[in-house]
Length: 407
Figure 1 (cartoon, one colour):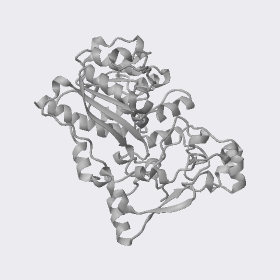
Figure 2: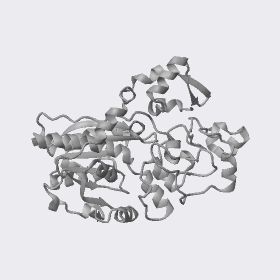
Figure 3: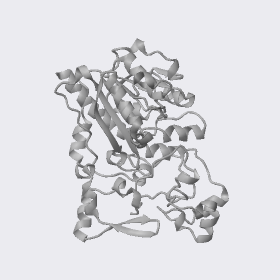
Figure 4: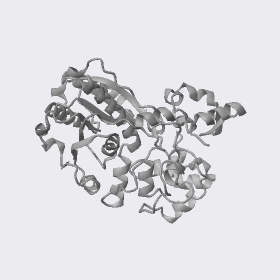
C-alpha cells in the first residue's frame, strides 16, 4: 500500500485487524515521498480518535436509528443532492431545496420528482412561508471574502456574501438546528477572521454552535480522502440538557476497489458510463505511471515533456500525472478528473475516471442519474458531499432531534 507522506494522517486505509497483523509481524507501512519511498510505523496511527473507535457493532447500531416523528429539511446550495440524499437515508423528509445551477436542479427533479426544488438565485427567494416548518436548515454556502476594514462584523455587515443569504434564511425559517458544511480551508480563510465572523453572526441571530468539526470521509464508509468542515448549531431556546453525539466511524476504510468492484459497497461492478478521454500522447505518457504513482515515477525525459515549466519549480506537485491505486482510497475528487494539477487516472487503464466511477467514489447509488453535459456531471459530483458521510451525520442528527422531542 502506497501512502502520500502528506496524507498519512488522513488515509488510514487499514482495519484494526490489519494493524494487529502489522504489529505481530513487526512490519512498517510504506508511503511515497518526493525523494522516493519511506516508512511509517502503524503505532503512530493510533493517535487518531476515529481510528481508535472503529467498531462495526456501533456503526450497525447507529444505522438502525429511526425518527420518532417526521423531521423536515430545508436545504440551500443543494447541488446534485449528495447531502440531501444522505439525510434522506437517515430518515429526514424534504420541505424545499434551493439551487441556482440548472443542471443540478434537473438532476434533483429527475431522481426525486416529489422534492420541492426552488430553482434560482437565493437572493431573489423569500423563505418566510416556511417559518417554523423546518427542523433542520442545511447548506454549503460559497465562502467569499468579507471586507473587514477594522470593523467588528455582525449580521448587518455581511451583506453581499452568500453567508448573509444563509443567515437571512435562518431568520426567515426559524429552524431548530442548522447544519452548515464547507471546505476545511474555511477555518483558516483570511487568518481565521471569516469563521470567527460566521460563528459570531450565528450567535447574534440566536443559535449556539454545538459542533465545529472537520470530518474525514474515509472513516465513514467513503472510499475517498475527502474532508468537510461541519458546523452544527441549535436554536438557543432548545439548549437544555441535550448533547449532540458525533457518528461512530465504520469498521474499516474503503478503497477504490470497493468503489468500482462488487463487494461491501456495491453488489455489482461499476456500470459503463460516459467520461472524458486523454489526447493520445498524454495517454501514452501516463501508461508509464504505475498504480498509485505520479509524475516522479516517469523516466526523466517524460517528466520534462509532461511537466514542462513545472518541472523546474519547487514542491511535490503530487497530483500531476497521478494514477489512483486499487487498494487505497481515492484522492479527493475535483470538478474534473483530467486537470493537470489534480489528475485522477484510473488505477489500471490509461484514462480518467468515468462519471459513474466518480459517482461511486462519492457513494451515490447507481440509480441516481445526473443531467447535463459530461462536464456538468463531473462538476455536480465533484462538488457533492459524499452520501455515506451525510447519512452518518444525519443519523446523529436524528438521535439529537429525538432527544429534543422526548424532553
